[in-house]
Amino acid sequence: MTAIVIYFSRAGENYLNGTKQRITKGNTAVLAEKISHALAIESYELLSKIAYSESYDEAVQQAEKEKQASARIDYEKLPIDFTQVDSIFLGFPNWWGTYPQIIATFLADQEWKNKVIYPFCTHEGSAFGSSIQDLQAACSGAEIKTGLAVRGSKVDRSETAVKNWLLSYSN
Image (cartoon, rainbow, N blue to C red):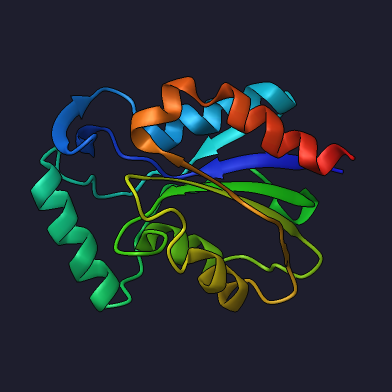
């Protein structure tokens, strides 16, 4: 089995514990690193060709416009042969109740038949929202496993949650 971690994350001003705070590494990136490290597998970040604003409010507005328009987001090509990958640990922040449009674009660009997706997300109270159902609709032929949702404000202390989530797949 070839497994990889693919994620999208955004640093800058974020909403944590009810206030806006500046972070140097996005919450989903922190969680992706923990998963990648625990499994000793490669991790790849989806990078938008047009960066999101450092301002939380501006990024929220941009994300809302993208969702309403079902926008395709140009992203940097990943250095992987996706046909050689069986399992994808797919990470994203919950934006507007689901995954960001950059994830939607990535999903639409891939063939998902016979792939296994292990979703994980960061949020500040809405968990996965509709993203699991949206993944099922977007990834025809893939098996979508039970995901891991972690509050962004708790990613620094999420080792036990990650370990328990991963252990559920080793039995």
